[in-house]
Image 1 (spheres, protein in one colour):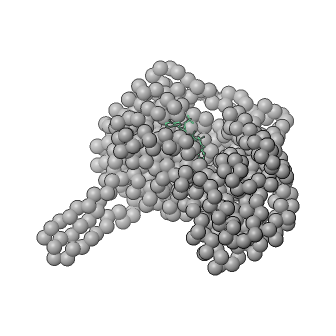
Image 2 (cartoon, protein in one colour):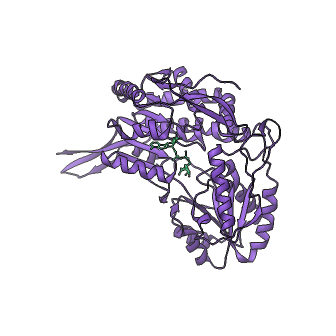
Image 3 (cartoon, rainbow, N blue to C red):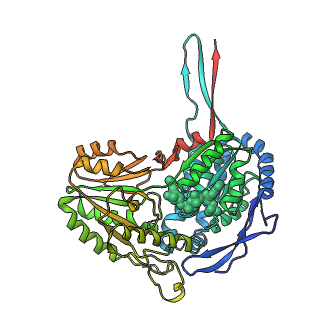
Length: 482
Ligand code: NDP
């Protein structure tokens, strides 16, 4: 696929960067250049902010149901163009085409549909003071907000932020990752086709430390919704604190799965393969620390290694491929250095632990074999650091209490998974885990109404349903005295 250069989307138009400065975007499965993207600067941001300022009165005054109809129109266009979007996401990320077709792009459409339906929500609350007066609350838009997203699920996470922000009457300055800009650019084309009013959504491409930094510092940005790494999240929180901007931070994870001997073994095994290696392990919710009850440790180890060995690492275009490339050369080298560190810490490599050479058009691509380690303690560097790749560590445990303590021994707290058929144990354990999300006998079963987010260094705030709508609005209490 040869592509024209990506453009910024400002004031309803796709525009080149003012400085005419461009970056390259690379297909990580082939290590070939796909196209160029704007290396935007603060002058591009000024244009976008001015456009958003002009659009605010129109967008805020529009009934929510009408704003929702734009979201539905965009969802419809995403579905119409799903094949193109899936291919763009595939070449930009290196993940299998069948994943972008079945997960990334359908979810992007669903995000717009889901939040469009939220227009029917009962936003106002009433607090009756009987003969003295009555209070009611109102959710007002914030003004201009920033949505900054990472490269692992590009359109999926980008739209997860933009849709609720728009529904609540905000104008948005959005920045996708410079590593994966293609589908955000295509979304701009769809917004133009949907006649989204000019300036309501503005998409700026470029580097995090340049245009991203300019966005988070801009005085007219009232809130920042960010998904990405913990260090970037801390930096954004510090910067936002200067102007008391609202922040929602969805950050890294080092998620534990606790596997008790009484689990449904076959279901657990199939799901644990997915929770460990889906998207090459590049999902914030992936489980990278597997705690296994001692009595089934050997059985689990043998079955898990055999099942992971059956995963097919290869050309993302092949329909049988389950594992594509990791997202970039930089990330590939980072994953490999973590594997070397694990070996230096005494890890036994049960599977993988090295690159995968894929012949043909992918011979220069960045592929890592699914990697399974054992013999590392919870407090080893490997088990404390987010690797964000296809690398998992197996750790045996003897008691329920030990498993809980070990799983909680992490600076992160995004999600955890518990495998048991004992309902009392399921309740007991899940309540004691210090994570924002706990799945029992499941992984990544998502209801978009539920609160999504992490504790500790995995983030601040919650996305999803009413939590996102509250974040992207200001609550006013109106008290009428009698
Ligand atoms: P980064 O933190 O490097 O980047 C995320 C986004 O922030 C990118 O768009 C990046 O731009 C931008 N950015 C970087 N620096 C700044 C800055 N100073 N100001 C404003 N924006 C900036 O994360 P990755 O893209 O590497 O994503 C991987 C991380 O995301 C992992 O830690 C993963 O766990 C986390 N994640 C968390 C999720 C959650 O819901 N909790 C979900 C998915 C991922 P650029 O790309 O140009 O550098």
